[in-house]
Amino acid sequence: MSDILLECSQLQLRTMLDILKSQLPRRIQQHNFIYSYLYHYERINANREQLKSERWNLRFYTHRYGKLENCTLITLNGCGDYIVLCFTLQESQEELRECLAKTNLIEWRAKRMYLICDESIIPLMKEMLPLRLNIDWDCTPFENIMYITKEKIAALQVDEILPQDLYVAPLDAEKHAATINENWTHKYENSLGLVRQSIEFNGGLGLFRRGESQPLCWMLENEFLSPGFLYTMPSERRKGYGELIMKLELKRLLKLHNLDLFTYVIVTNERSLQLHRKLGFEIATRIVWFGKPH
Image (cartoon, rainbow, N blue to C red):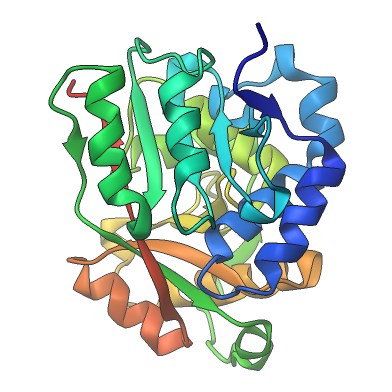
């Protein structure tokens, strides 16, 4: 028998993109995720066996018999680094409930597994997850989806003057991924592949000292087209470098995609919230990650 989940065609995803566009900024996470997948569609689907990161080995599914206007989505990827996004616009959430209850495509026994959902779907997830896997699921603190409009990005002033021995340049996956991964707060067993693939697909910027091969500060984007991984080496902090790199990266992405952009910020990270607010970000909604205990 056919599974309740049906892999989305490009046409279906483009239709969902148009529907979600009318509901920005609240639905910016799902909108930009679909956009990112379609932007890299040929590259991902032509070389799945060669992808370095299972998180980039994405597939988008919807309810086989659902209504397209509900934008019911479940995304799946490689099980070594298993991130499942669940979403629907349907008020009753019945399509998503049926998908979670009946599908055999989700690898519930995957060693490392997280499910991401909008705050509106949290009650449904708390109801359904124990039915599929009878464990005590971890639930992270809320993360704000912080968005910034194209107009605000274009208006950002980049007037910082760097010392003469410093310069900004694109990141290189082969040269810089290991340093970025090593200093990432959320580093895990397979995260180096994610960092490398993210640089290869979406690029990123670093601040460098002349004569040195590794960056002092950097920013890049994940598969959600969400600017992140922002980090400044401890010896170079409180000099404004993080803010500079973030502004330059936002402008680079605006030139490439002409989109409003979003980032994830944990609600308790006041320092990051202050930087985002300073640059003009606002809160669109909140999400949580449900995960299997390690």
